[in-house]
Structure formats: structure tokens, C-alpha cells
Image (cartoon, rainbow, N blue to C red):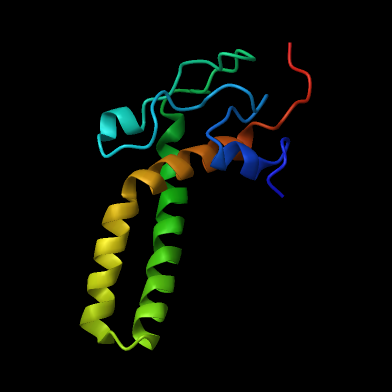
Amino acid sequence: MLKKGSKLYSVFNNKCPQCQEGKFFKHACTLNFKKNLSTHKTCESCGLRYMIEPSFFYGAMYVSYAITVALAVAIFIIGYFLGLGLIGSFAAIVLILLSLTPLTMRISRLLYINMFVHYKKETS
């Protein structure tokens, strides 16, 4: 499932979606939002331009929204059945989503570019 050539390999290993060799983000996941979302202009291995068109990654906001809503619903259900009640479940949602924001933003960008760029075994 996470073999080279799959979309999930590219997403979870911070790799270029086309060659899956070069790194997508410049820095490791951090709380500094400028560093967290800074990407290379092109892939160091295959030369793919990551910014396919101007404002390309605005579409990643919709992916991020879907991930956040799914996480919030899951956290609410788990919290409610663990007996946290309505207020406790809401507090758990806020705390967990705030702490996962840097990771969700990175994953949403990687998922979004993987929707449009496909893996090629041999790139020139």
C-alpha cells in the first residue's frame, strides 16, 4: 500500500508526486508556518515544477477542510462515547485540531498535487 509508485507513498514520505525521489517541502514539519509550507520550486530529481499554475495550492484549502471536518467528527464521536460530554468533546476537538494544523496543511498540499500529477517510473 505504501510502495513506491503509490500516491500514499508520495504523501506520507514528503516526496515529489512524479518521480517520488526528490523532497516536496524544504523543511521538516514545524510550528513556524512560513517554514512549514515552503516548498522547493522544482523537484531536485526530475525537474517537475510544483507550482503548476499561479495560486495552484488554493485548492488545497478544500482538501484541508475535508480532512479537518472528518477529524472533528471522529474526535466528537470518540469523545462522546468516552463520556466527555458535549463541552468536553468540543474542547478535545479544538485542542487536537489546533495541534494537528501544521500536519494537516502539509498533507492537504501533498494530496492536492497528487490529484493532478501522476507517478512516472522513468522521468527525463
